[in-house]
Image 1 (cartoon, one colour):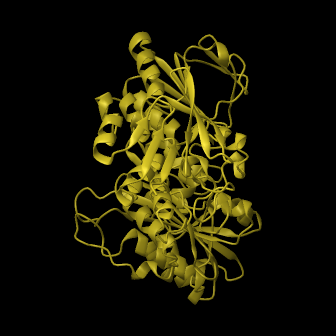
Image 2 (cartoon, one colour):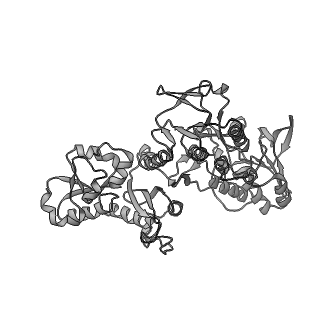
Image 3 (spheres, one colour):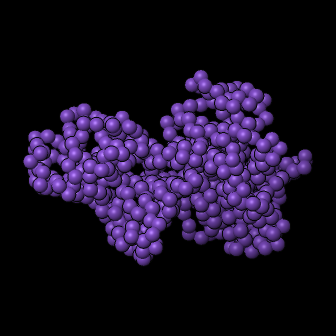
Length: 547
């Protein structure tokens, strides 16, 4: 008997499911319904089309319905909105060209994706220069505005991935850009000290940044803010997040979970038999088994393929997602995987952190640039909870490695054992990932004790003394208030200047020299902890204790 499989929604999840199903079931009847005019397009490329790095609009369209029909024998129906599901009769209602019709199914896959979250802001319904960006029709409207109105000033409300990408690409078009973000820092999915580097890069490229700030009213070209200020904006992009598009599932009495996303089991089946769901609309499990929403193309593609395997009888399971992601911010690459420090704090889970600063390739080879790598781990077992990294080059490689390590359930003890290709133009004999592993091991094995940048003020208030082991010429650019300075190379000869009754916090520029100082001092009987990330990291986030 030929099986009839209907797929609601295309793009990453839906089309991955459709094409994999065809490879597995040549005789199956497969119909894909897409609400919009394009069933397969590169939504991740939209900001770069705005910035004219992607020059041709046609390059955003990955596959046409005709091409999919010819190669995969798929019945692709664009501009066809599924408006209802009758799970008892196993049929759906489709609205196309103003007319409704029914289509029966044996199996139904929901891949409706997510939609931009549009907050209730006074005057928004009357504003004709405010846009969201999720699909090709959205980008067409923005491009028309750019062409017809030639805006001089643009405002991005929300500093997530899309907001940051739009800020960069509009700025590259010569438009004065302001970012307005309600959270305390840009890119709220990463931690504050790492986001400080992003903030600096934005400002360096003439993008104005306003955090802890929200929009309360649109009035002509004026945006009124909750801090009493206002902005003039010719073009405004709302990028305050997305929400699962699950209205259809809700009407069908399919169980919903976190933020009204669709609950699925390990086989992507919903609470209703023979109805499956994948992509941005579903609840996934993170590596700790907690519910999460991870709206990214890579997991959606994987889920689409896996649900096709499952429907076709292959032994495949939904194993969750880490949320590995990367964004370019002008000359800076920023990437993350797994859980952040702030997430672990909210979960009250014990964790430790190390920050490592190392070159993307051998320092003696021309063109080496620094990578700042943050590793978050369980303080006894060494389980890797997450990682974040930033730099000009090589960030993707390191986070991809650590994402793989988390998936493979490696610990920090395994990281120094990982073997990477090495030649001076490509890497270092001790890669930043190896170095992060060594640093984490030192914490677990008791060879080092560190404190984080946000703990420094409290520790000093308890009477501890900050010992800076940088060279005097480095202090000219900035130093800690009331700190004691003994360069590392002079430390052994000047131990008489220190008091074993005092507890010291030792710092340098990046944390490496201060770790060496910590080891010297501890073996001489001093009480010492290392400021993780040292002056370089602390000075990016705040200048509270700096003179």
